[in-house]
Length: 375
Image (cartoon, rainbow, N blue to C red):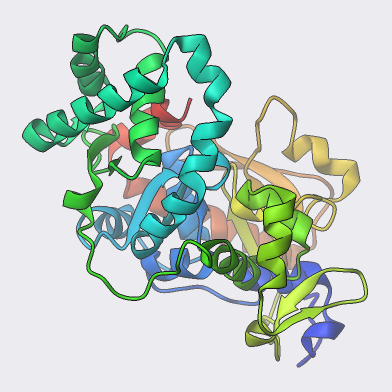
């Protein structure tokens, strides 16, 4: 049931197959490390910490949860934080600073009304930043609850939403970042301690948006500027300027674009390429329209509303069902329609691999699920 023709040129292949291959969920592409996955796709949705790890699993071969943990905590090649749209993502650690400089102030500005509702004026946020920096320097890594206790010394109610927004503000400002998990719970550290600046080439503030657009095109093309604006959270005018700065941008008749550096032969997999994508996966959220990813008749089953995005079964980049964890570590699949035997076999293999991966997670991670810091 492979949907990829033999040795096609990229302009003869449906967008969905090119996107699936770029996202490392089609065309037989599987990578060998968590860092390689994140480098390829640039950002993995991470509002649910376990789902983020399952997103890395879906794009790799044979990785364990310990491999992913090492990338986060030992190698520090990947970093979880509030980036695109102010939503938790995992991105390459080496890119964290320039992305924060580009997006952090925009997210802070977009949160202004919530700050006002909570009584978090500019002065209090600045004092909180300094207070959190001192606490993390002296006592870090610290959990959200522990940081809330420190913020209580400034008169901040530790039981409300104010501590979350102040911690998030400190990370968006490039002061703090996510550190090692403790018993399945997020901790925070100083960014400069966790990822010391090592120099090297970084995009200038003037070029940062264009660099973000280039990373997006490498991982999501064919795509349009509206897709990039939706994914990044940049205003459409800024997204258009970044788009216009791309060298080697090839615009197709339908208005979507690809980069020449990413174009070329697109080999097909030997059989239907089946992946079990986690909730909130980037492939499901990275475009303005969902029509190329999920048939319109079934979109409500993947996107039921209320901000929920269910785990999906993808075959050659097309969602053909949803899945859920069954019990602590099992998998239950709900297909949209009857599927060919080879796809069923692919689903069984993927389900077995999800089960294998979940068995490598510590029990606390399975119990925590969606990170409370994401809400």
